[in-house]
Length: 461
Ligand code: S3P
Image (tube, rainbow, N blue to C red):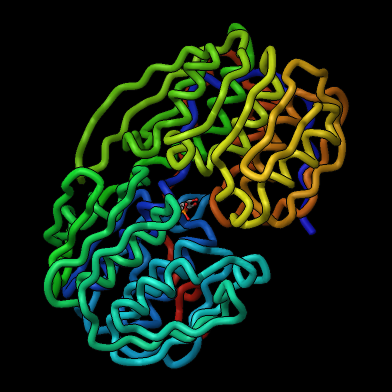
């Protein structure tokens, strides 16, 4: 088991870049694998989750050529050559690892194929509910079998002739919305998803990028049927969910300033900026737009943070940032209420229970509710041993908390961080060890070398 021993924060680096956006990386690999022809994906996130998606598309017939690797991070540029929307039946089961996004979105794609695929996951993923995608996909005509009432993995997805549906999401979930829209590309006619609360819209922006016709009317997203994505090179911006760790570290350090470069700034993902501003942090950003996804540099200046209420429509926008925002709340003056966040109970672990337990272990008073928690800010944090429960965002949020604690904080089971943020520990060390003033942005050496073996046939299953 990997552990990270975190000491007190020494200084905030002037500049940092974070690896590529996880949601966009997954979707780019899927759309590229469904397109006839070659798409080059640059800025790809080579985390375990996203590599599961790449290997899945490879097992389904796409050709994957590694193009560029960054030391300490992994494969950041690759070419995916798809064979069109009719995929090859895989020789064996597909391993989705820890990745809910892989399993749920892939179910939508497989619903449109004429064969049965088995999707497996690790222990955590095998406990997560897949009924939320099995239900609408069954309405469209696919058969999705899993275990128990929640339809848990291993899943057997049998695709077939689909019919279009209009489906209102029972919970705010971009993964469910995306699964239905992806399946909709294989049905005749128009498939519509109604989302009362907006969720991240990367599937929609990438449908545009890959030439798939769709439109939005109010709360309804409609995709036209019988479509095939067209190959189109894409550049993936940095992940704001990864940037959030350093945004909070800087925001809670009076007198500090950090610039986080080339971060995705899709408005369905920038709730963390909104919340930090409300807590009294100074956050500004530049905006650029290409490939349909806005991105830019985020500048955070540190100061005193105040408690706030995080609830309602902003929740789906900050769903992955709530663990680190809970840490920000512990470092703030006054109390913070997080409500309407019951979805946190079915993430990689029960994130409400995991955050409450670890904050308490650090000396923070926390009251837990079914849909959130109230955190009393301002207590002196004490270093302790953190249980990650195999959840990457718990591990990283408490590594940041550890930088503000007296004594040493030990993150046990830190290997889970690789599911979303390769290079996290190296970046954390820049805060813990400090850097000489005026240090330039480290230029990562780009090392093109064959990583074919890692993605090769022998490891496909
Ligand atoms: C994701 C959507 C969110 C998020 C997950 C990635 C996506 O899940 O928590 O990390 O890429 O669509 P839900 O859609 O289940 O809320």
